[in-house]
Length: 325
Image (cartoon, rainbow, N blue to C red; front, side, top):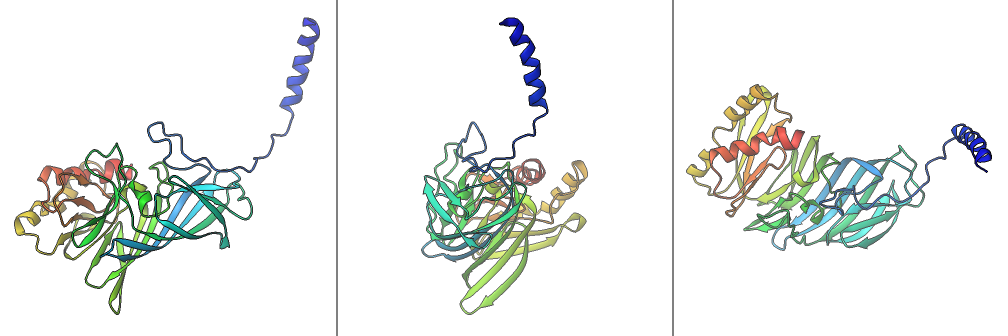
């Protein structure tokens, strides 16, 4: 028997070596990216390329309604795939313009297109949804709840590490960055600040619409939308970088002065590390005091009291280390 086995095995191996590999089998994307600390965060089966978020915000009730469109590339044939979404009500889902079935399970939105999506194929999914975002209690965020939250006479977003899913459906893991267009309509007495560059403001009756574009990829926890009544102070920074600081109306001069050296800091870090990696930078203050600060991409977030200059510098340097790389 041993001699026969020894003779047959090489023939079997030779036959296997000549076999054509089986084609990819269409299957659902994974409900996670394999993060041992956050096993439910993110999803498998695709690579998000771009998000287009269009939101109407009722500031008084802290309610949002709109659509989130994700353009993605399938990494294997997909019979279904997941987005992360906490709470909020989903009205409808389309994939490549065709209605798609969907179900909810905890913080997973599970989407089944009418036909499998082939590997290496770009596809688009649009989710229409509405509701009142509920802040997420995350043990990794010792400083606060996270996500979209209400503030005095406004709203804000601070999501590190898992909060983005409380205000839009997303592949909610920093391994899958994407570019963003964020369009937000609010009552005209408010302003909207978000990541990237403000492309357009349209006034229509009692409402105003703000369109922000991030041409550089952003991790979901670094996305932000902030709504309040602001004084905006703008200046030209080094290498054409536009600096814009958003101070709630009534912020005193002593607090504003904590951010007066932002351009000098940009110049210093650009010379020491590398050119600033984005088109714009700035700081935004909330309408209430918080003891933390967050390096939301291109627009660092601080409590109403501001922070020491070294904290302002710390959040800025995160734009290179943490945001860009």
